[in-house]
Length: 66
Image (tube, rainbow, N blue to C red; front, side):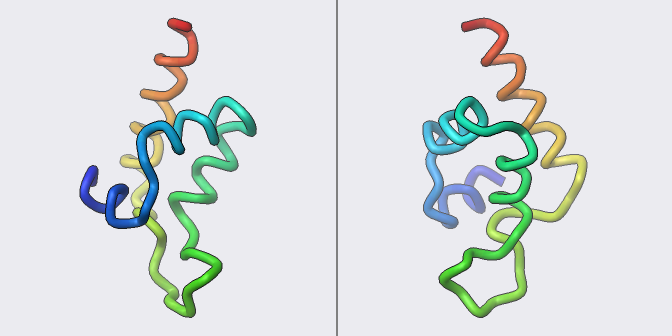
C-alpha cells in the first residue's frame, strides 16, 4: 500500500497536512477517487474500506499525540 501511495505522488507529509487542514473525509476522497488529471476510472490509491480506515486511524492517533 505504501508503494501505491508513493506511486500516486503523495507523501506522508501530504497525507498528514491534508488530514489536519481539512478532515478525514477529504483524505478519504483523495485516496479513493481517481486523479482529476487522469481519464482513468481507477482510484488514486485504493477503494478498500479496511485500508482507508487504517490510514485515517493512524493519522487520528498521530494528531492526538501532537
